[in-house]
Length: 218
Image 1 (cartoon, rainbow, N blue to C red):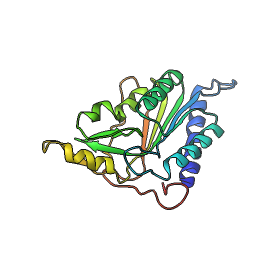
Image 2: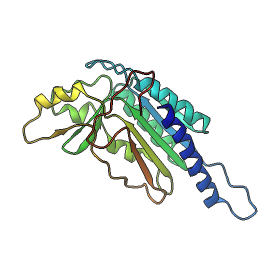
Image 3: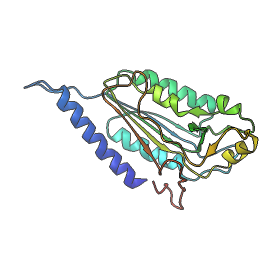
Image 4: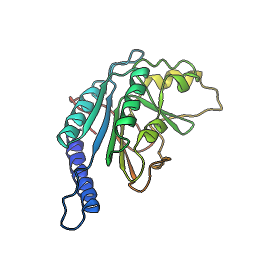
């Protein structure tokens, strides 16, 4: 994770330099691009064994982004209401941003090719709870600012997931629960010419492990 934080810093500097070059008129000083980030790390799950690293990883990423001049909206161990509240705050505060970053670490799963992120209070004993007790990644996509902003979504949510196994037992045979996360198409209504980058902790459909250190291997 520390190596990724260094990479993220370098990537942000590259994007900021590109934005400044595009905005600058001859013989003028380019305005400082507005930067807003949403950082969520869920470790202390109520209905699953706690994950050791997401909260630590989120704090490292939040610190890295603050050092890069971001306004950071940060939440650790968020329940369903808390995650939705943070997403709403981010949507409002990043609406006129030039660069917006969303980072999530915690449990996630894919069902029927759609990705769901799991708040710490989720209990997935019914397929209906996917709609009411999880966060669809589409909500992250919709929260990004409109064009020509640059949007970045970082998902460290491909861990071995006991909540997914609980849900699998309740799903009808017509529905499919896959390993890890499904690939996400990097486009969203209202997000345009600046582009969107989506980064995963591992390949789509694969499982990432927390490791034994303070931060995850990612």
